[in-house]
Amino acid sequence: MQTKVIPIRYIWAASYCGMTLIKGEKNILIDTAFRESVSPFLEKELEKENLSLKDIDLIFNTHSHQDHVEGNILIAEASGAKVFIHPAGVNAPHVKELKENVISFCDGEKIASCRIFFTPGHSEDSVCILEEDTSTLIIGDSIEGRGSGFAGVALIHDPASYLESIRKIREICKRKQLKRIIFSHKTDGFGNEVAGEEEIAGFLDASEETCLQYIAFIKDLLQKEKECTIEKAGSLLREKYSVTETQISPGTANGVARAFMKYCREN
Ligand SMILES: [Fe+2]
Image (cartoon, rainbow, N blue to C red; front, side):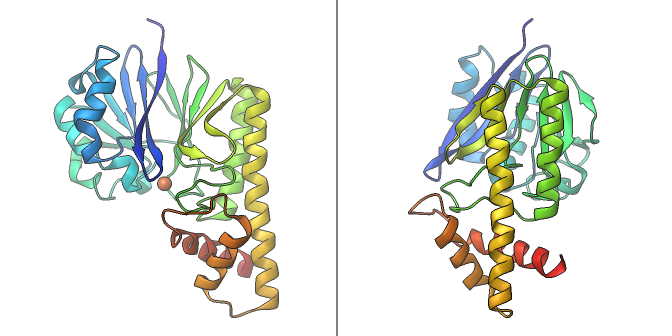
């Protein structure tokens, strides 16, 4: 049976929240969006592939943010599938409730046709999942280009890890001749996914450049205003780098500002 990688996009927050179905010897659902997106939305999407919730063999979470894990419980109950997540995510809400049905990933391990890579930076527990039959990398929110309309900026919460994760993905590209990268949310200038060497390199370059720009901007800000507040830094960061006029959650940029202020004070 030829493996198929099928993005499933639940409309959310002026964009969408992505799940990915790997249909092959095992049916794997990567991320589960929300409780409300399971029925009837996900059920109908699975029906298009002649599948139902009970046909899901494995659930993988790219990280433990709510918009990626909230549907876990309903889908695990319907299918009996175990939920796999980074070890740092096992105690997160919508994961810990599954108790012995939660299994930790190991960095580099292969499960069915998928190889798991730890790629922290957006969150401590972010992973990328490489579907090896199709050379497709499902990255969740691990790397965000120039950002999305949700916060207006790229949601980076540990700049050093984020840059290291980009380097790691570049290596995977070279070693595995990557054909396609699928995002969890619409990403400014790159849409839903990138395919082919040139587009993939462009996306990774934009992601790295964005992180380096934020570092330079916050370093400069802290030189001019040593005691600058997180709120002011977040607002200035948005003013300078926002990819949209209307952010759904402008306050989220403050978390990014906090992370870069910490990084710049320590480096
Ligand atoms: Fe996230």
